[in-house]
Image (tube, rainbow over all chains, first blue to last red):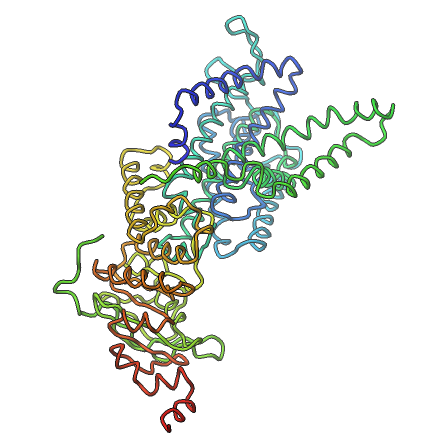
Length: 359
Length: 271
């Protein structure tokens, strides 16, 4: 509860700050839409990455279990949604029914992955989870025969968008004199879910369960000696992390309208892990910042590297697509050199440490 | 602290070890060690380095399985229990090479000790219902009491890794006490402490015992062992070579030989 206690010292100021942030977040898509609708879509994907990073943060940041196959749960959630809301099987279930289903199935897969890895740590755990991620992707790629479940590498198209009665998230419509485009609708939905996910993460961290996870991360033998059932707690961490990924996958499916195994490759797992590490493992807000940065920076570079070269040299010397990933990699290396514990390693903790001890 | 247990039950066996054996490769770490710890006593476990003291702790607390022999704790066998089950039964321990949760505060370390005596699950954590909140408050209150008990309330918000060595040892004791143990197993709690800290530790051990917790103590500081322990078990090369009141054990020939080496003893006796 420490974060809430810290907020209570200047309640007026805190509420004003929160109100300001809220207004900014509500206005954001309209500002972005002026620059280009693409930026609203990029923002929506960035929020999805926040979900993924927060889910992985439970496994990696809280419980300290290195997971390199996390994207598999995203894939499971995405395919559950795609199969139950597309012409693939002619099923068109409502999203509020499928999302929990996707979360539940991802959760089961989380436990299935967790069970054989309970005694592994560090490098060995990374290899096993990496293998698991690849297995899921290869299954998605090949489950087109003898029975066509996933439609193989072609992926699944025409996936239903979110729809509540007549209100579809896929169409543009006028509401209260404002034009609400599809990405803007999704933005508000994702933002609301993100708030819930952040609160859930914070509450988990500051609970008996969260402390048990942190104990396992810090010293597994001591945790067991203190009576923590490390097997159950690790499985719980995998299950919780995976179900976050499953929900994110479902939303990805609906937003994109098309998914294929290409979206769930190893490099995506590494990307999400980088977001967690770069932002600050175990710090919920740090992880959100990490996810936003790693989502935006490559996109900003995409739009600036080409024009910058033309301005400086008069022509394009290096293919922007190659150059931006080079810069991106360089940025990551520099980050880790100068802030090895992440962007926000433990801001809350620092504040807590400065606070006088209550007697 | 809990109500005093020094009543009718005091003096009855709490832990009975019968023929405990354990070997690592060709090394016999423990060879058919048997002993009985009585309720309410401070029971010392001493011996030269490599005598098998910590191995005995690890077998007792479920980290290793014994090859032979049984433990009976309060009349129930401990065979095959995992470390977390052993803790739940009421045996808490500290470690020779301090194993605190380094990146958590002192308070959080002790709060984790309450895990085994509390119930909140994921849904309670997320929805924060009344009973979960009440339990959280109780956990924090108890943890602060225990920090106060070991004299560390000023350090509640300090990360465990930033604590002074003596404080780390005391924090490990507070964390172990948070599990409401009936037997507290301490592995060299005075190691690295100066004379003042050791004197304070002696007071702490006596007050823990007064509060009804039986103590099993591994310690190299003989002054502390002799002044605080009711009875002492001496191990050498995994074998029990003596057991009894501290003063008697101190004069035992085999014990002196184990500590000083056989020939030295003979020479000493010759003069």
